[in-house]
Image (cartoon, rainbow, N blue to C red; front, side, top):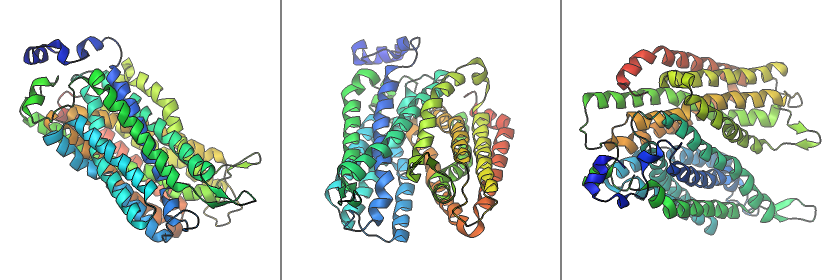
Length: 473
């Protein structure tokens, strides 16, 4: 506990733990509470998202809603886009009125109700109501839990980048297991099969049920242990009198010229990040379609389902994030500035597409013959390099937003950061739509060249950006 905190509250018992004392014990225990809370929320979200397009397009007999594929794609696109738009609003409400802790609870309960609505009401009305609740709930949840991670550490604490790499593992643990677990519910345990073993009706609604139960578990963990491991952090909005007396990072300071320049950096970095995610999100669209048609997915006598490759990136994240967490706190890692880290991430994204160009070359170019397959090696290497690029950019970006944002606007600025993904989904969708007409080779090479150039530009702007950051590393 800070001396200011102790003097204002008048009792050390008001905080169940001492953040200052934990500074020499690795990461605060609150980080791991937030890790598991986020893991279950991501399990819920990615589990639902993994079966959503199938639920929309399958016939009523098959357990779906019989929506035309083109209409279902629009619904899916708007849903995934607005999931990253509402955090801007949810972050502002948390900063001004709610506080992060209350916003996370509101968001978690709302998303849980959205999943249960999809489970209980299998109609167009139920689908729209469920997706609406998920969009609103995510807006309250997503920016505020990331903000809480940053608030566990004092200004200048070198452990913060490492903490966000650990936190990022929680996201990807949930993202990895969700498609596998929800798929077992929808395609195995609750599917109706004929005498030959073929699926007649999918149990998609039970997939939504298990996603909702995952969200419930995450909320029970968060609300059961938040007081013990987070103390007063995030209990009050940043503009309230209570927050000004309990926060550990001097939120009572006015917004200065330096603060405004720091927050301007957030907008600059966000502009670059849009193009990173537009390229990265090809994994769920153009890369997935290319894999389905032109990659040899056979391993012995088993053909790997195309959808399973959506778990490759989270798996690499889980395996590599601990190494990045260690590296960022090493002597060399501390010397690499945030703009350089993020610029390298963009360059690596472009390099990753080189392997897809290798796959195209192995097939003899953009030939339409689906019997000519490329090696699985090219695809796996693309995912590996893209994952390394993501670890250079995404958790570092989450961390720097919490460093640069004035406490009064912490969650709002996190919403701005997440807004990049909203725009990127739209841009990425347009890029993917041109693959059929222009060919994968041209699209992949264009994306590769463009993001590499942008990455090099960001690295070149390192010094002026660092000057605007005023000492924030």
